[in-house]
Image 1 (cartoon, one colour):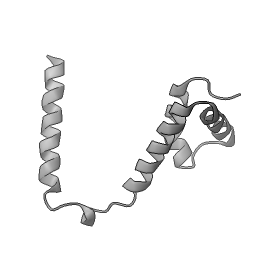
Image 2 (cartoon, one colour):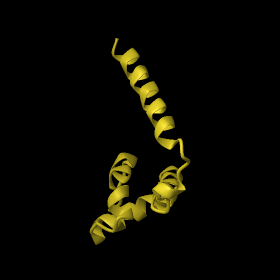
Image 3 (cartoon, helix red, strand yellow):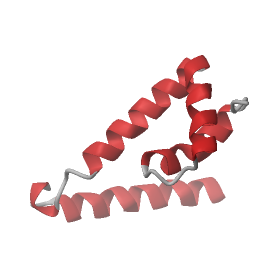
Length: 85
């Protein structure tokens, strides 16, 4: 039996990539990917991001990274506050 709902596949992606999923879960997961091109594409994108994230160190970041991230986080908080109103 494969996963029939895409949401079940998305819930398992991290377990699959990290090697934490059981054989049964992996079989259901990959069975779904064989029939669902959207989940297959999402999984490939997620896997690529996961692989690239593991290759970046703090030495690779630009000198103003902390300043830029603080600005971005402030903007996100402002947007969230607007949604709450």
